[in-house]
Image 1 (cartoon, helix red, strand yellow):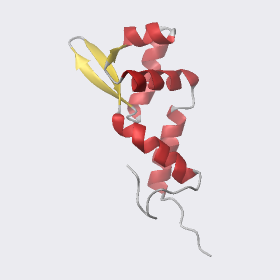
Image 2: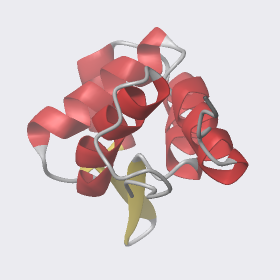
Image 3: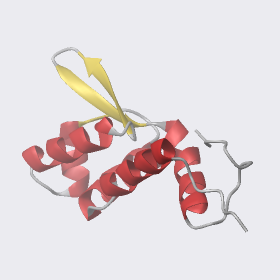
Length: 110
């Protein structure tokens, strides 16, 4: 029996998502933004997470690189919000990787 593997491009994309969430502070930031569902400043995130501004900025950069977090310019600052598409794609990606496909073979769920 020949098994159909996840294509390499999708596997690389999913791996980058898992790496982005491989830090507890990034998980907390993503969870905070997902619960708030509104843009937040770095200062607001720092106050909520209780970590240094430079650390939060570093984690936001990593989350933004994989597009879990979207950046919105606001004057001289930036506001950060969760990418709503990721809230639906990430569980699907996890299901696919764990062998519980939810899409037809060959479909990439995002």
